[in-house]
Image (cartoon, rainbow, N blue to C red; front, side, top):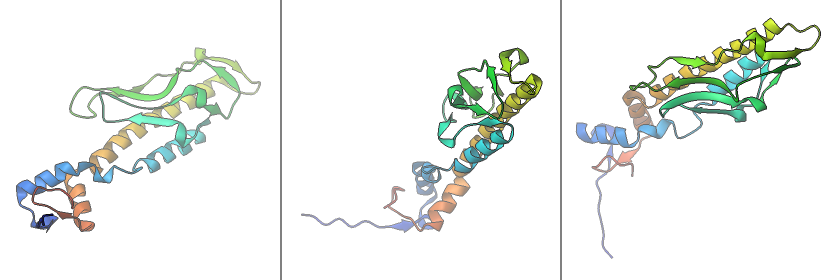
Length: 177
């Protein structure tokens, strides 16, 4: 058996280069939980307000790859109206990666009136299309919001604040002990 002694430091006691190491090692500390819950919950509620209904658990998204997207499998959608609609398999918004984060145009597949095939008496196909496209705009806004939230939660200032506020202690290499 051998005894090892390690000096522990709070964040403010670390040298500048070790602070940088600590920040980079723990960049995801604020996003290792369900940080997206409010945005997704708001999306579900806002889409329900325009008649497009789905559950939070049906929403999928990615903001860290070459294909940023948010959507719902269209088979999991229900509506406040009765009609047959030719929807894309993935109902939502996407952005092609152009490098440097969310710099590409966020877009969705616009629903045209000719995609609404059967409309119940008293329903207006133009209103249905307008509501579907409003929901797609809500998906676009949600994708932008998720990206902004992620950028904020992983920023140097916010990670530093978290490390200090939680009184984490570090070794001389910036690892939480």
